[in-house]
Amino acid sequence: MKLSVIIPAYNESQTLRSCVEAVYARNPGLDLEILVVDDASTDSTPDVAAALDFPGLKYLRHDSNRGKGAAIRTALPHATGEFVLIQDADLEYDPAQYGLLLEPLESGRAQVVYGSRILAANPKSTWLFYLGGRTVSFWTNLLYGSSITDEPTCYKVMPLALLKSLDLRCTGFEFCPEVTGKLLRRGVKILEVPISYAPRSVLEGKKIRFRDGIVALWTLLKIKLTGNM
Image (cartoon, rainbow, N blue to C red; front, side, top):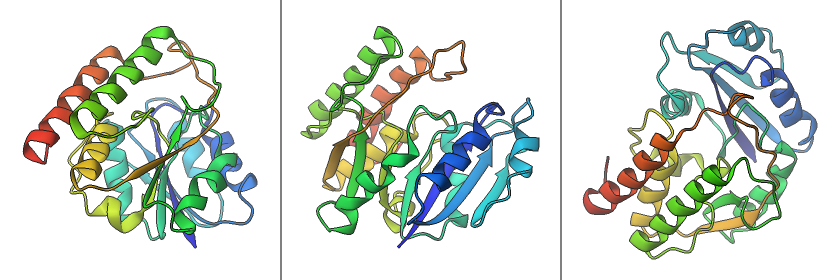
């Protein structure tokens, strides 16, 4: 089984190498393909990314800053794994948990797996971020009749062919609600597994903002009503 790991990176020079090293070191039994997409960083991220020398690693770069969703969409045509996983470059999420996320897919118990920060005892970045995520999850369940605890989680894992089939149009953080809305609208069941989480602050580089939560709510509603963004 081959796993494609997509790592969008914007101004992540402090953590990108550590992130890639952790993906390989903590998953010695996996056939890994890593796709690092630099979203036109203005720090030394391009130099760090260009210097990465690991088997199965592909480096892509945007000429202008386009957002996380655009970075993921850029990577998809280059991915060749059976399954695909999204990994933020900031190491808020621990790559040691890939096995936990992949087991339900490999055993056939699930078609899509989300890593839930809510199902495990984890620290909170701030109460505002926490409540924002809970609100988006509640709204998702209200619209689609699902029972998701952590819709905005970065760890979304599924067959690569399924993700490619969703006709993604996102550019920014609306990647998460677009994927979730389109999966649930198709009737695809999403299984959640508990994961650990080490949040960073805005001062440490956290990029998601209040506005992104509003966009997520609107994206979920529009997909429910129309099927697309």
